[in-house]
Amino acid sequence: MDELITRREVMVVAAGGMALSQAPAHGADRASDASEKQTSDVPVSLRVNGRALTLHVDQRTSLLDALREYAGLTGTKKGCDRGACGACTVHLDGRRVISCLTLASRCQGKDITTIEGLANGDQLHPVQAAFIEHDGLQCGYCTPGQIMSAAALIKEGHAGSDPEIREWMSGNICRCGAYPNIIAAIRHASRGA
Picture 1 (tube, rainbow, N blue to C red):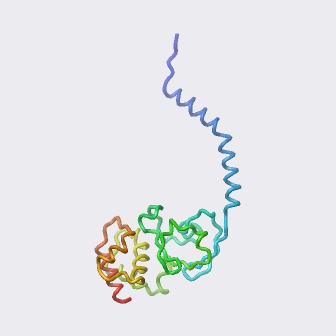
Picture 2 (tube, rainbow, N blue to C red):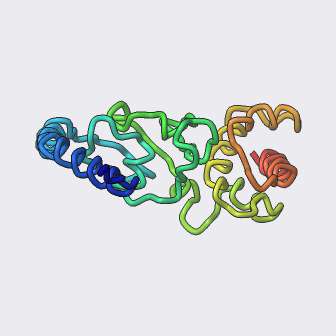
Picture 3 (tube, rainbow, N blue to C red):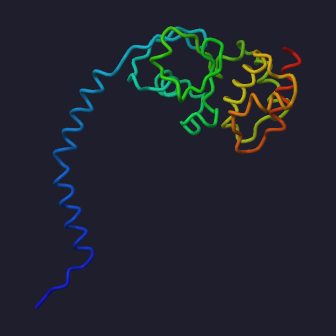
C-alpha cells in the first residue's frame, strides 16, 4: 500500500538537506570574510567639521557610512543609499557631494562639512535659520541634505530665481512636499549672502 507524503514532510526533508549541504560553505565563508575584513581595512584621515579624524574603515565603506557608523555623526541621513534622494549631501572641500556614492577612502586628507558643522558655534548658518523661519521642513528627514545643498547652491551663485533654485535643488527629494517653503527659505537666505 502506498503511503502519501505530506507537503510538510517534503519541506522538512528539503530544508534539512539544504542545511547539511550548505553548512561547510557557510563556515568557510565566515573564515574568508574574517580574513578579507582584516586585509581590506584602511586608515582614512579626514578633517570633519574642522576636527582631524583618522578612521579605520573597510576600503569599500561609503563616506556616509564612515560619518554615521565610525565618526558618530548621524545628522547626515541615509535615504535611498543610491544617490537619488540627496538626504546624505555633505560638503567635500567646499563642494556638495552625495556621500552614499563617495568612497571614504577616496576622501583622504579632505575637508568635510556635515550638517553638524554648518553652524558657527551657537549661531545658526543663515540657511538653517531661514529653514526654521519659513518652516522648510515637515518630517525633517531630508532637511540636513536640503540645507547642505541650499548652502552650496547659494555659495555657487545659483539662487537667482525660483526656477534656478528648483533646478539646482532637483537632486534633493522631500517626500512631505515642503518644496514651496524650502524655496522660500533659500530665497530668504540668499538675500543675506
